[in-house]
Length: 229
Image 1 (cartoon, rainbow, N blue to C red):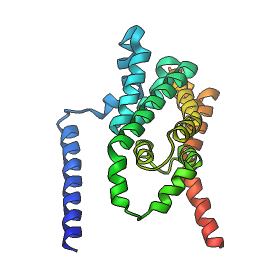
Image 2: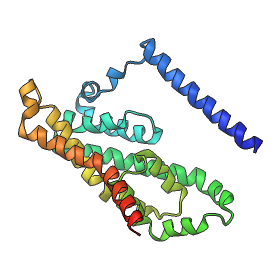
Image 3: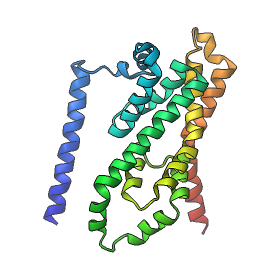
Image 4: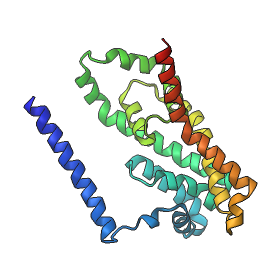
């Protein structure tokens, strides 16, 4: 009981320290949140000239591995900097490289540790993940109930087969990648306030809204099914 209380207090103290640290960095203007917008990231990426695409792919992969923001603005930057088609291609490339490396890191360094902790506990769940790995990963990619980076490492700690993880990740990321690149590309075409009402931008907003609403809709449907039983 005492250990649980001490553990809770330690986690709370760490959490408060992190929040206080972030607040101080922003307050003293050591870090400006405005520096992490798609436009500012685009300008930085395009500064690499011919190596811009390579720089973006590496940046996205490293961002995925580190589990540090700004993964969302970085996703929108693809279409903004390279256009819808090339942006989607570079975004998918960076995402696949990053998710692959995180899976390998997690499995190589953490799998043995998890097996020792399990000792029979939750082994059935682990076995289900091994047998239904493809559908499990595909579902969570399409319905992002679990944070993008967290899922990468969690899969590496499970018994999901690498080929199932890789294929499900690729297929599951396609909708989000296309919408992000399209939305980012439409942002680049906004020059005046009137452009906000352009059909292309309105469609982009609608598609992005659908992608963001999927988890919430799923939760509502799930609760209704549970109540109806």
